Length: 620
Image (spheres, rainbow, N blue to C red):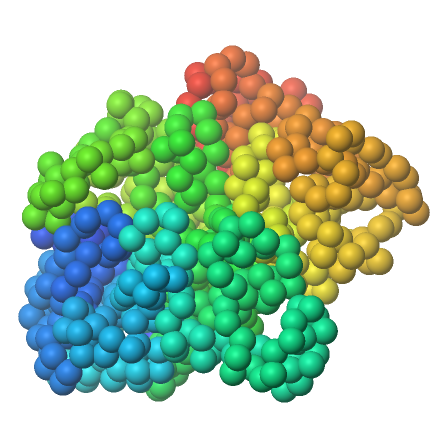
């Protein structure tokens, strides 16, 4: 078995495999048979993600998608890994062990036969309708570990253990540990396993004393066994009550613990010798569909990496931000990698029914929408690809290019860019010299989740980099590293104000309290901005950063990402742009090598809306 682990390299992390450090930049596709593993391995990509499935079913219950590939879990103790073997062979392209490495994305949703045999273990809505397995099912956890153990046995028997260097565990809707639902208004989970788990959780929370729960809720329960979860009406209209708050904390902790338990089981299967991770951390989401217990996952030593796509804001238009779904910087703070799934649409992207019709023959109208469309031109496509890469590079993140249905990057111009980008990323990741420069820290939690995405979209045009943390990490973040602290809930502000209220710092209280008028007061030398609503003015945020002495790279409302060595700008409008550097230096296009003239601390240049430039900062 290959050994792998996460190790620090400067201000970022890399993967060490058999003692060799590998930059965490990878490629994957849902459909190896029509993908470009050959082109990417020829381009020097050593890390390959391959999606495999325990069950013959689509990746989510609401879209009508058919199974991507055959599942390998055929019966209670019956397994057929022939399709996995086929896909692995396509991925490695004949390369020897050590030349390329595989991290399988193993979808652990149960097959239909399992649902028929164990109906009491299924997730259910308020009416009793079943939706896949419950995240509280002890039977599922036991079977999932058995499935992973059998998969590991097959890897050893087949020789594929010489290639597999880690595990990406997946479950829930679209493999992202989102609770499966047939439609957006389906409230779950009201299954008996979930109710039992909820009552155990409440008993622990209230130290086994039902009277403490009654006092908190204003209730009159005789025992924890009598407590029922919040109803859909309460979840819709009374989310601020103690009863609803307790339910939602459990709801999210239960998802987080499902990930932790599966990763712990996987560590047992591989003897703790390989990295394990999952999709998680969607803090910028509504309370019923997002991930709002990141502290639970981050505290687990069994979880080595988290992953997510960029947010789907208006199909990610040219001129707009590629925003992140949550507190990625908390992940790095805890010594874990965050993989960005760069599913960047291009002019070569097709609708799923055009390129893989067997996956979606009937639900054409459901999936025919702008979210699958990319820019119309090669130039526009390269601009979004460069923007995605710039966000990853300057943020200390990992990534895989996600060629979802295959063929998205099948153009020489795209591959030329990807080769150059990988060389830049390898140098940055493996040199150990990567340094973050963000001076603007944002703290979010479950209370801020519903508006965090829109808030970050406003922040994206400030012209300076920022970090996002979960509020539970406030004690771990050093205020001296930042000039601005932004607190998106009263809870986070109360936890931080004693340490963060200091001279020459701006503190922004947003999304709660008074919202009719912005107020600024000085307290112990800090400028405190309050009365800011859920969609603050970008200019106000920039002003708060400026008066605190944070460095601002651009004042033109364009999208800017930066670290100590690179600056990426994506033009929100056409016209002249100016980049200010925090020290004497000059800019060189990191992709073309062109050097730009400078004047003292800034450089001027022209850009068209939607264009992206990635600069390397050079000394004078």
